[in-house]
Image (cartoon, rainbow, N blue to C red):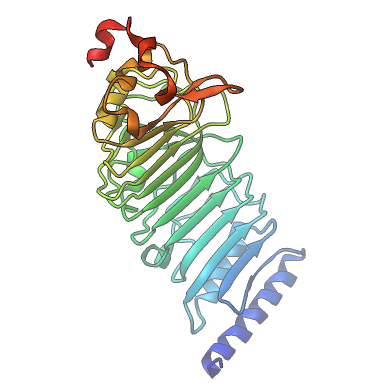
Length: 311
């Protein structure tokens, strides 16, 4: 049963939502669910939204389960301190096609936010937020690439699950995430991966999945991959070359390694086929319509590969 204070707060919030709806003069408003989820839907002006948050913060309860900002072509920027003294556990910002800049908007939520989802917006880079308890961060905006820099995670170091789409990753971007367990990247930039791009320093790293639905062929420089553990499962969507100068440091950590697309199994893979690394790999030889595992290719196929196997 709800307390009198909560009933008073909830009634006030509903009245506030209704008055906000009328003042806006259109079918778009922010409102509060009984579950303490705040929803701001439709082309709501950022100043109207900020005014709503300010008024909501004057009520008894300041702790909410979730904030959803969705289907809003009107906002271009989330300014610093937008949420004021409101504290949310989860925030979703979805379908704001003109949202190009996200400042440190969390306010008091910087100490409570645990999940942040941002889909179908138009950011050019990963937001630099103060979110000390943030554990899960998902960002995907098909058709609009954004850059991920190391500086973005300066105040978000507790992230353990990170899922990104359509990104260009700068070197050492994830190095400061000491608790990172899972990294999934969909639609990785077609640019070659520079040395240090996927270097990690997490003792919990268990799952790294790098794929692309575009033309990416998996080109990488030596030193691209480092910091993998013997418990890490690493899936690479494609690889242009499987040379030891790129993959030996990773496989020497006894990482479980898989390549999604079949590869050409000539001398470039002999150093894996004829080594102790083989049982921990899933590499398919052939093409998209017909392939066999590298383990199934006879060792005799690589008898003329020579010194390349000595690596």
